Length: 292
Image (cartoon, rainbow, N blue to C red; front, top):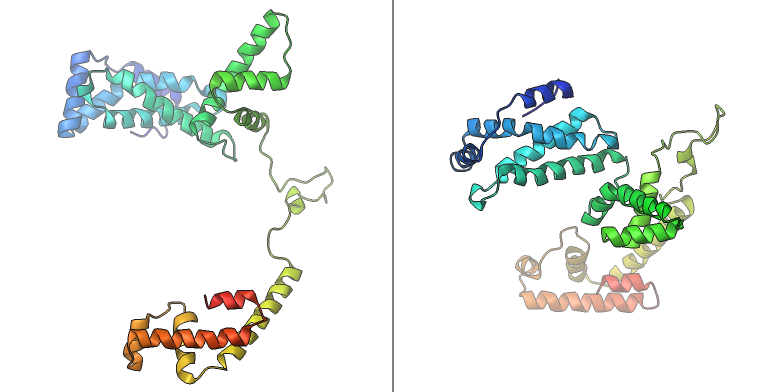
């Protein structure tokens, strides 16, 4: 059920005209959808409870999201509820649907509150939707009692009441009090002011590191070339196929090609590695580890 192109006023008027279902009719529609996948029954059930979805969506307008978008998310939650509702449980559909509608709206609000996600764990969601309310009540009660709490005390009280770690409260407070800024904004009002993105540290490998890495790679390659030159043709072939290929070959496949047993290839490989280790003694530990 899509609502693109409809205003929230139009949706609200349409929902208010929908029928009110009694418990028996609701149950029949729920069974028809669950057991027969009757789309007419589903549509009737959804339409009847759109007023509930719209009413819940309206409670989240203070978070700055467009009402039409909130209604869209509420309707998605309502449809999920209808799809998962089990009429054998003995509860009204409206009671069950409330939880799905609320969860869908809350997820949408949290996704769109900031370009930087505020988090989606149960504690973060609880904080996001309850912290300001709890904080206001604590400060109101303190003022009535003539007491002034410092910020850290208020945060500790919020953490205790909501049932989350103090660190989560401190993190959420910082996120809710901040705003999103473009990294392409200039640091000053001047036309030629430097953009903030230019002040970020570049995580890419810098020139000195690149030169050093290149030098190390060349050195390691030379050591390996020298070590390989100490082997005969068959040993070099085994080492190349077993260690220098992207997709190393098995001892069995090499044995079939060389006309040797799997165990004999393993012995030749071990002997070749032994020769190379001896050639590389005193060199890089990294190269020695290459041969296990």
